[in-house]
Image (cartoon, rainbow, N blue to C red; front, side, top):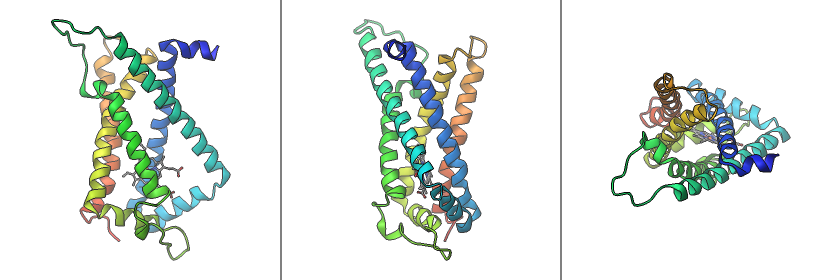
Length: 224
Ligand code: HEM
């Protein structure tokens, strides 16, 4: 039954929608958690320590997230290859469908976000890109996440990488939410503009929320 479902493109779109929804959920929770940085070192360091104290549960969550990410990438690539194959080539006059920059670049924005996530994990989770500022501990003996994040975003190159990645995330999430609504058949001709604006709004809040962290640190509003 599952293999049958995955063999047709509707089934695969459904997997894309569900896995995309789960990852968007993670990103929202991650953003809310990260805003603890605006409350100062105690708040963000305690939040990180609490997450760490979940022990094996955190590894279960990481495994689940990795499986969801792998499925999203696999079906994203195969659906794109299929769509490209099915596209009529070499028309004398190319009739453009109602597309946006986001919808035409989903595969590229997706791969760029993947590259960002790999860098981000090496930066803040494995902590190999800037080891000099990544291993400090606070007065309570907890990992000093505040020092690591603030010291990182005081460097213009790192802030720029994160801000650029969040612009790409905005493009991907905007079209992703819109596609998800269509996949589940939640829209009709009348509600298309409404859902389009709602997708844009959610993606913008998410991206601007993340951008505010490197921006406020780089501008010196959040500092050590
Ligand atoms: C300004 C933006 C961001 C900041 C400041 C930030 C901060 C952090 C920090 C400090 C950690 C390490 C937590 C710890 O081990 O103590 C982390 C982990 C992580 N972040 Fe972010 N993050 C940002 C954006 C994002 C985005 C946009 C994504 C996804 C697209 C993302 C995905 C992840 C993942 C998957 C982890 C690993 C979670 C784990 O430990 O299992 N982050 N982030």
